Each structure stands twice: as structure tokens, then as C-alpha cells.
Length: 188
Image (cartoon, rainbow, N blue to C red):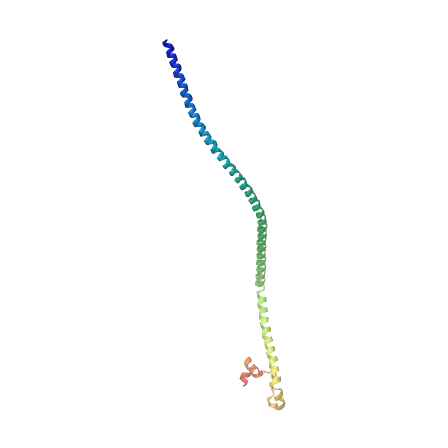
């Protein structure tokens, strides 16, 4: 019988060990259940946040797409402006090169015709001097005609000297003016 009691004791110990094991597993499972419930609640919150983030991301993506389309449209418009400015720049370069060519051509022609130009300037100076002398002679003739017209009739000794004849032996323009009656200050 001894064996029987040992067997009962062994069965009781085994039952008791099984009961302790079941209680320990139950405690662990309750703890795991609590953690899983907490994880489930956290995941529910995360899921809501993810849905919010997803909606915001979708809205942001749509806005980004609209902004990209707007930028592309404005870029296309700006490209035409840039092309126009580039065309203006090319036109200005062409104009500058044309002005340079004309300037170089004028400079080249002037340097080739420098002697002719100096002759033209000299001849124009001579022509201007002749014109001045001609005007002076006209004024002198006019002054003689008006100043001595009444005197010549009454006093034949005060007749003027011939218009083309110089009063002095030197050709002095101031004396010619005085004699022509143009310089009133010296006559007074």
C-alpha cells in the first residue's frame, strides 16, 4: 500500500501543480489580454490619426497638383515673355552691329576722303569770306547812296569816293566801315 499512497500523493501533487500552472497561465493570459486591449485602443487611435493624415495628405497632394499645373501655366506664359525679351536682345545686338558697321564705314570713308574734305572746308571758308565781303560791299554801297545823296546835290566837293576804290592804301576792314558810314561812333 505504500505504493498506493505514494501514487495518490503523486497524483495530488500533479493535480496541484496543474492547478498552479493553470492559474499562472490564466494570470499571464489576463495580463496579455490587458496589453492587447491597450494595444487595440492605441491602434484604433493610430488608425484614426492615419485616416486623418491620409485625408490631409490627399488634400495636400491635390493642392500640390493644382499648384504644379498653375506653375506650369505661368511658366509657359513666362517662356513667351522670356522669348520676347530674348528677341529684343537679339534685335538690340543686330542694331548695335549695324551701327558699328555704319560708323566703321563712315570712319573709313572719311579717312579715305580726308584730303577732299579739307579742300571742301577750305573752299567753304573762302566762299564765306567772299559772301561776307559781298555783303560788306552792299552795305557800303547802300550807306554811300543814303548818306551822300542830298549832300552830293548841294555840295559837289563832298562827293563820295568810288565804291570799288579803297580809301586807304592798306586793306583795313575797320577803316572801310568808317568810310562806308557803318561805324557811327568814329564818325561822331
